Image (cartoon, rainbow, N blue to C red):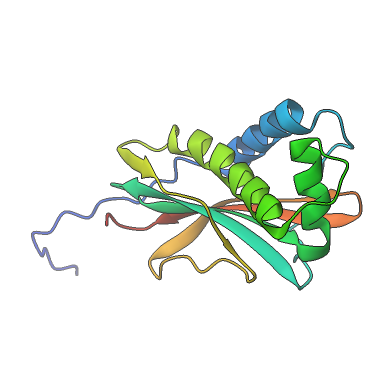
Length: 162
């Protein structure tokens, strides 16, 4: 027998799924990286080997979230050079800016899928895997290989409003 507490339970709905994330990443890749080797999606999740760089951008609103791009640190400069279409050596700041821009592009497209989404935060870079909020869960994930290096895209959405 269940007890009626009088509280309405709101179902947690993911407005972002693996397929939507894969489409967003594919469109971003075609637009910004069409001149380099394709990104090869993995069939199963794959851990990005350490050391890593993680670019993340937060989404505020009724369903706050975090969009992360995790890449092997050794491949980050090549990925940034491809985005910037640069042949020369890049500074750490250039690499961080480029990775942040990738997270920002994906985050903006994810934000468009989430009803009542608030603002998109500024990109942040860390030399560690993402640390989503304690009430967040992985809503969508895409692991891919580029030039023999792993790249992981993850969308974390809060289970409740902020």
